[in-house]
Image 1: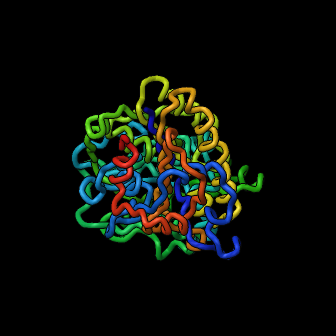
Image 2: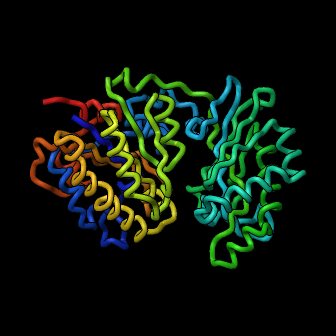
Image 3: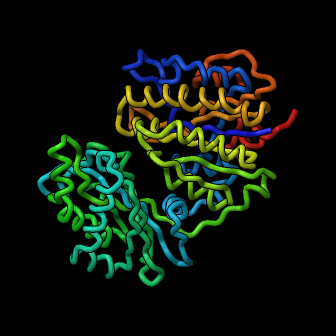
Length: 409
């Protein structure tokens, strides 16, 4: 028996006017998701009460770890996913490359939380030039701050143990404040002055950088300011294999998922061409799942980030297209090809959390889930929020999901 977890990041939503008052899942024709719903269909509260809604807390919960007791901050998970293992006393920060628009730093508005989806050599060149800029380097050294550069819009910042500020700091999440002026959003508290100085210096260095001039000329948004946020400290997770007696693998394009998986001993193969955007290597991700299962893994998670990113951008059609591709190019492909690996398999599909087109932010409400068993496929039925609620099948916490997936008849 093989087990597959499909996470469509942020696919759950609330009704939107552009879709006739329906959610994307309700408005779209999704035959493959509906096949999965022919099995067990219900709602699950993946984000515990009192915990911030996000993929970090939700996916920890889905994997069977209680974020109320183990969670130390999202950046610690992403750092682990990029091979940056925090030492005792260190603090990590998520460092986004954002797109700002404005004549002055404080008056600027956030246009994009991911620098207009910058990635690859452009992202690396911008960050390398930034960290080597004398003013930025001086400010970083005085704060004990080191940036670990990745080929994405998000990088890893680490504050060493000798420079830990006393007291808390309030950070704004850039994806929840698109279109807003940054002055009220700048960090406040112990780290506030030092982080704000780094942000201001980055804007002055990057706004006229040749990479950004070329991006603007090509009709793209510039990645012209860093935005540190989401502090975290070293985190440890119990072994997934010891917990479930299953050897696991996780296929994703985002460091967060790599970090959660890696910390609990789950393999994290990298897929060439895989991104967190709508344009990603769906076929390569599916092949990585099949390869892992054929190679001895009992369980494999495949995570698709694009619906969440499109919702943060307020892109209704983009989110709908991302869900269509999840249906056809991920779930459909897996249903077709998994029997070649093992004719007996179970598949769990869900949204980690809702990401709302109306607010462009995360929500902590319960999400629809479906569990399909190849031995008892059932009759296809609509997979969406309303039909999941109508079944009356409710799981009160995320760790119940994998226990339900691994149940044997």
